[in-house]
Image 1 (cartoon, rainbow, N blue to C red):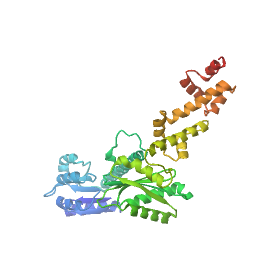
Image 2 (cartoon, rainbow, N blue to C red):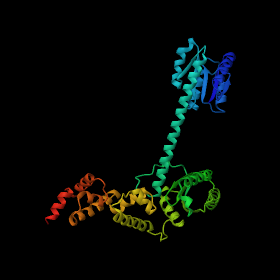
Image 3 (tube, rainbow, N blue to C red):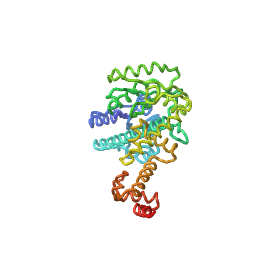
Image 4 (spheres, rainbow, N blue to C red):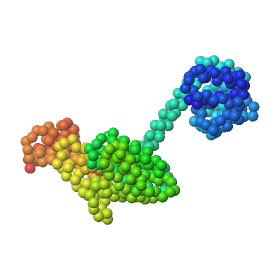
Length: 391
């Protein structure tokens, strides 16, 4: 912890300095003769904690506290005060001063207050790190939504960095090691380091590839070919993988991200080549056709959206959005109705027990199966079988 001790009395200052230095050897202690000297030091380096006397010539402790709170809000302040000044010290609350050291100062008191300040600063830093991570996660989610052209009502542009131009690139490899979690995260971290000098980058890890969006924040023209070549050579060399990396294109608008992503996927061979005009719509129909075919065949298994998206090499969010847009039903609704269709057939055409039919169409719990069946058919499985047995 970086500490600044401010007192215009040399004897008091030296005594306090020895006391603080003896408490812990990881404290970096600096001394200032008065408030003016302290302000000069604060303007040249960062301090975690300032311990200051109140009554000093020129700039007193309260004025110093006001300067610190206005310019360095993360710096903690502890007031050093005498008995006669205690009421005066309470005014420092307006400047966020929470702790006081009453002269003459005992070492245990100093140790306790510094420990409290240190704990508060640590908790504040941890909270800031958590907030930063949450903001980063939300930013990455919004970028992912842009890739998959999710039906967002608006783009919260405050989450996106200022950029002059953006580029969307995809990276893949036929090397078996590419599919391992550690390798993928290593590539993501390396891309972040390699592209930091150009602007802000976000890398999304997917089943068959990685997608990186680079937001350029400088004025110079980007050498995109050089950026890709450097990334490919560096990552391939360090991880000993044969990589393919392609740029889908560049744009100045967020709305272009999805189209550039589709182009990059075609260039690395993840999507089939096809005419670009109306191609995304045609591609969506093909994906949904394949999804429905898989559900129709595997309805009796523990089929999940995540598992199906992995089979189709698309993101779960993408598949969910497309499924709803193309069929008018959610993935879960389609799976349930497919299962009920087969359940009705088995109830009409076989003598299987209800629990057997439940298992045949993908339900391990007969009670749950009966409840779902009744919600869609208006009658339970027994009633349905009886009704159709008489007709």
